[in-house]
Image 1 (cartoon, rainbow over the protein chains, first blue to last red):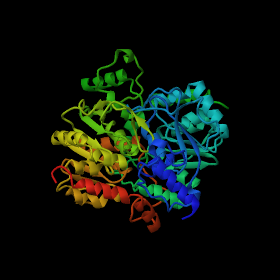
Image 2: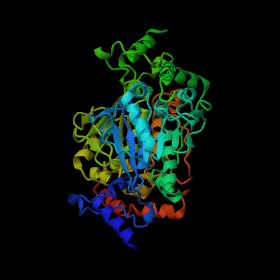
Image 3: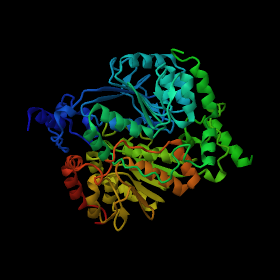
Image 4: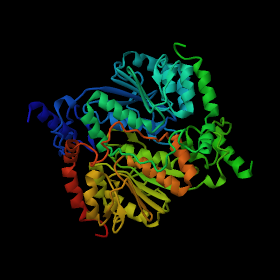
Length: 278
Length: 278
């Protein structure tokens, strides 16, 4: 066993590596004394040394965001061995999702690392519009994006990136209900689930975060690593119906769900006129 | 427009219906005065009255659980119009997931409704084992399960149900890494992503919670409703690789990831000998 691999094992043991490779987020941190004798439950000695990274990842959360937009990619990002994943918000107060889950942020906007490997933004509806209309958060996103190695969004999070002027001339996607708005932000709308354009990667609605997250993991590590994470997540989806897109859903179901967003679309379109760089 | 439909609209407006149908969780609650003049952003007048339910749903969380096990089904359950979804934990302290997300519980075990429509348990690894070894939480699960209309788990959450004696003679599934342990709890192991047996529904690993959640929504409402929720989640998954199960993943990837769970499997197997009803 090589020296680096033994070091990994030591780190793993020190971190008390909780569950899943997800716990690997803490692997490269200094060993907390209290956990120094924790039992090693996950033997990761087969992991090649080059799989240990040191990414700084910031995931923005805000009132009424959609939790699944965040948690799908979070599972994948925290599976990046050695990466540090921060939940960033306007304050340290608990942030309540649109469906009532309360998350505790790690860092305020000011505290978040200046130079990020990944800047990530989830979507929502009214809460997302509020971020679009908040100059402070939009300025923070524009600032961090200037140096970030990767800029990512899921669902209507793309509207926030658009508001910060980050979609201009870029191929991008978003939730089907706001897809027509991409042009308002100067983007080239693409009807795909995950769209890469240079350092920008955007996902379609909500559950597309799992596909986007795995795609990012493959980009930052390699294919076997991403396959390992996929296997850990047992990501072999079997939706009970074929209704996940406007094209495949019954027409009346599409019409009914689409009409729920008429007001939001109008508000977001109005907001687009004030976008950075517009 | 019928009277009930107008009532729904009023409730929706009163709740300020945030984002997604997920916000519908609050639809049937009394209108908070402060929000009485909130703008109606989601027009749900096309929803037939029979889509409004009043389910009481308890989702157990515990230290080091896997967040995605919870948040996939949570998205689906909170899309049940009128349902109340509670995060239940041993105390009201924030509960940290295995990948470092901190959630705030709504209710303690004692505070959770006695009669539930759904009792749900997510998985994890070391944290899950600790719940299995905690007589208080196991007794709570056994008690609530006695009257619950539906008992559900995702991933290794099935091991907790097994510990509470709820899998004996039942067809069930769990994460591939612990699938062989189902027999230790007297279950009939089934190699499917979502397995129904009477009032018990179990999901495979982590991401299977999305399939399970939608399957439950279809059971509690109807097919068009579940299709609407699937469309809202844009759940038309496209995993970048075909490595989501032990059968489809490359052999060496499977071997590497599987070996991470040797110790956990042994500990859970030992725990099975003390299961309720064993």
